[in-house]
Image 1: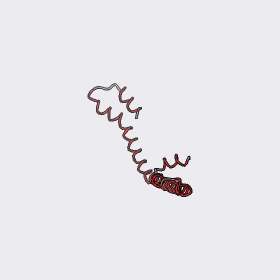
Image 2 (image 1 turned 120 degrees about the vertical axis):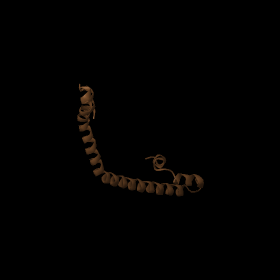
Image 3 (image 1 turned 60 degrees about the horizontal axis):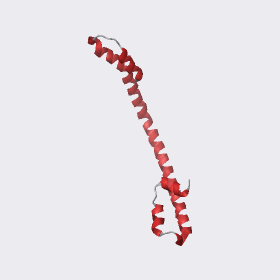
Image 4 (image 1 turned 45 degrees about the vertical axis):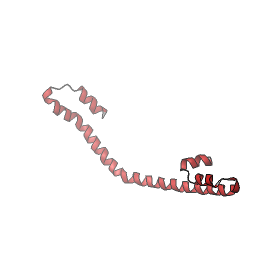
Length: 102
């Protein structure tokens, strides 16, 4: 893209040829963008699949941490305020990692 821009800006052309020269300077950029868009469309299913796999792993990890926290809360028994325990069970994963010390 930068190459096309520099080439376009440094071209010394008469005013009547401006549109033709601009078209010639921008054509490689447009071809590259079209190719990149096509490649991105080809990768879309793979990226979506990887995201779904990652999300499932995150949910499984979250569930595991929630169970661990629930077991810790049950072991603490009467020393833990039920409202506080309930609140801790509903923490977002990042907060749970901090609370568990990961």
